[in-house]
Structure formats: C-alpha cells, structure tokens
Image (tube, rainbow, N blue to C red; front, side):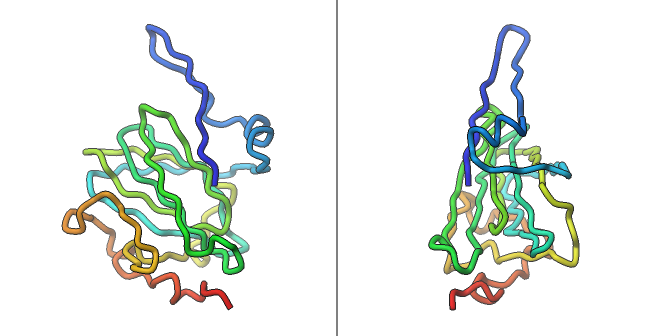
Length: 174
C-alpha cells in the first residue's frame, strides 16, 4: 500500500491539486497502474463498507480518497503467500488533508465513516465483475480491526452483515 500526499496549491480563491497523474504516480511509487473505472459513494456516520475484493482475473488496484468528511480506510492483505497475510493498514482520510491511499491487487478494502456525512471516491484499474466479488467479515476477530465506531453504532448493508471470516475463504497459508 501507499499513502499519497498530493501537492495542494491554495490561495484566496480556494485550492487546486492533481488527484492523479499516471506518469508522476509511477515515478514516485514504482507502481504501474492504468485506471478504467471511477466510483463514488455517500454515507453517514457509523456506516462500515467492506471488506470487499475482486477475485482474479478481475482483481482491482484502487486509489481512494475522501472529498467530503472523514473515514478510517482499511486494507487487509489477503495474498496467501505474503509475509503480511492477514495484516491490515488503517489510515484516516479526510477531505481537508487530501490524503489518498493506493491499495494494490490482493487486498480486501473497507472503510468506516467517522464524520456526519462522507463522500468517498475511488479509481479502479479493472472493471467490476459481480461474479468475482468476494468479502471478509468486517468484525473478523482474527483481524481485530478497530473501526473507531462503537459496535452499537455500526451501520451495515444486509450483504455486509453475512461475510465469512478470512480463514473461511480459503485464504489460510498452507
């Protein structure tokens, strides 16, 4: 994963920044990525979305950011042979910081909404394919993620209430 801190130019009119430049991104990160789909969601406090992923050959790298509000963004390594398998990174993303998180293929992704409302955007380097969709339980005790939202305030979709634990999706090391 990579935290992206864009250069923000501000004056009395407001601000400007490049949210993505393929050539600059590759030069600074070493990742070669070509985005083909942009997505946006709007949510309110306590919503947890995830932990979602796409199985090969539709696996996706994502560049995520917040344009309004604040989230705790989480990426979990689900690559079975990785030294960091089952480990996660959690980063606060806010509209004010303009910070972004790049999540490579092989990671499950989710976020919790920490502000009253959030508008969340992300770029994907592969098209969404419903048949390749996978997910892990947001509250998997083996992961131990602190979503920074009290459990009684968490709001989930019906689908996100019933995902298996990481060890149940065949992600265990051999």
